[in-house]
Figure 1: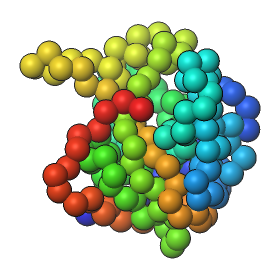
Figure 2 (figure 1 turned 180 degrees about the horizontal axis):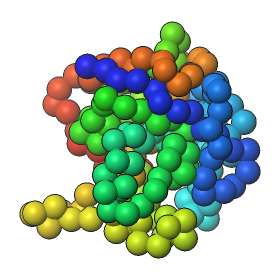
Figure 3 (figure 1 turned 60 degrees about the vertical axis):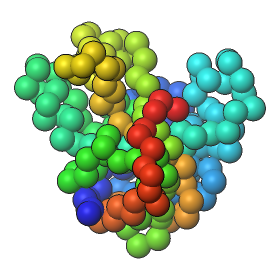
Figure 4 (figure 1 turned 30 degrees about the horizontal axis):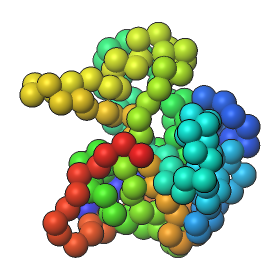
Length: 180
């Protein structure tokens, strides 16, 4: 099971979107080199306000490019980096992977999936009504979050568009993704 990196994005400043790059370097235990969210402790403003000593389980944000096609059908134009992700992928059901899944990216980098991104109202500031498209409910009434997954860097390395991604599932029993 695997897929491909379609884009890499980072930003040294707090901003909702992140510019695309030719490559990015993942740093073990820290995240994306030069990105505002890199570090061992939580960096997202809302989480820092609650407890700045929390471990950073959101070092690298990944989104599946297939989401952009779904959003386009609903009238929203979203491209890689627009939702603040660091790595845009194709060919992998990111949301269906369990906690602890390892993604081997390119020749060296390895990230471990920690959970789902819990999108906030900033998405509606980017495009009005977009939040309802990335957070909704299924037929059973359960909340469904589609704005990507979060991970930590286990092994550093350079990541580029076009790099292959190999999925390595953890030992069973698998734990479904929850918000981190």
